[in-house]
Amino acid sequence: MISELLKKELQARVAHAVTSREAAVDVMKALQRHYGWLTDEAVGEAAELLGLTPLQVEELATFYEMIYRRPVGKRVIHVCDSISCWALGGESLMAHLAAALNIEPGGTTADGLFTLLPCCCLGNCGEAPTLMVGDTLHGRVTLERAGEILATERRQLAAAEG
Ligand code: FES
Image (cartoon, helix red, strand yellow):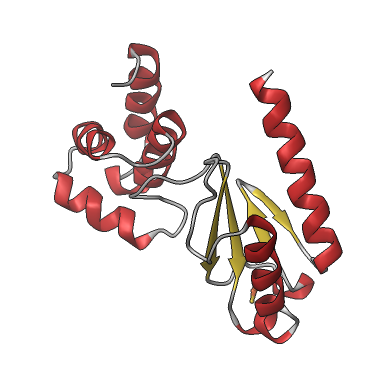
């Protein structure tokens, strides 16, 4: 269940949109931040906020790769597998990260910290291979750089835990 404050914020976002569908991604992302992923409860809340049916929200959610309809780790790593990144080492990058995290692509680490997902073009083809962690894009990611990114994320997660 979301707070009254968040509910009011999202109602304002929807009120400012030309169509409720225009606000749908923002609403789903906000609910996802709140719950960690887009739970069934969140789908229901999004539907109510947007004036859509839960099925319509479900359809929108499955359309966007950054909306998760199943539990994910605290950090989701999206590795681009479209043509430019694939041609410049995207596959090796994915394999390297999977080995470092000891999971298969699509999986979540046992400690619940990381989920590793392949994704379509992130719009950063000029700096392939590209990955995204949360909302942060990383381009020209070498295997060494990938290890550094993981280490930084681990440090930030540990610091957030206190
Ligand atoms: S092909 Fe990877 S960012 Fe476009």
